[in-house]
Amino acid sequence: MDRVRLGRALGFGARQAIKTLVTAMDAATAENPAIKGGTAGPGMGRPQAQSSTGPDPASAPPRTPAAGTPPDMPVRKAAHATARTVVQAREVKQGLRRGSKRFGEAVWGPFVRLSGVLWLEVAGVFFGIFALMAVGYLWKLRGTWHSGAATATSHRSLMGAVVMLAFFGYFSVSSFVRARRRERRR
Image 1 (cartoon, rainbow, N blue to C red):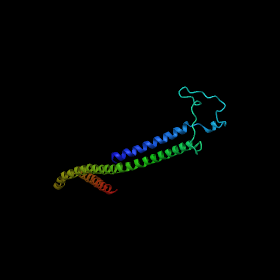
Image 2: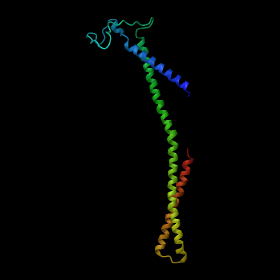
Image 3: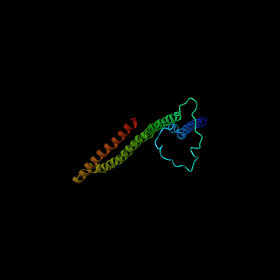
Image 4: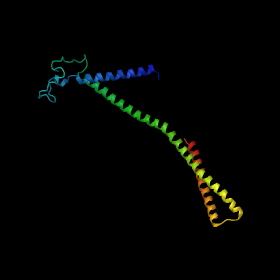
């Protein structure tokens, strides 16, 4: 969005907010028509304390509504504007929640998937290192078996190396296979 369009959008929003505030202030400061007509309302029998901060409300000129409008029209307008503002605020809150959820899915989803793939590949490398150590140990024991001087201890060492090669070789290969599957999955 360019600066001109952004300025227009912000200016329009600011003007609408000021109009809503002016309408609400007019409604709040308007005289109650029930008191003007002489009907008894809440607090009518009690004297009211005078405020020392503002002008005397009795000496203020009475406001007259525009010709052809009922006296409670500004109150209705203010209530309607306030209700509309509340609805808009709720919609904005819901939109923000949906947008942040989508943002989280768009950013964190690939990050979690790729970090899982990386973790599986690193684990596969470590298992592969142990499998290569077992291959190296088997290579050393091969000379003992070819010379015919195999003892029970060398036989146990050979079987341990074979088992180590089988387990760690399987874990290494399966980690890389799982990493490829996870990488291709969307």
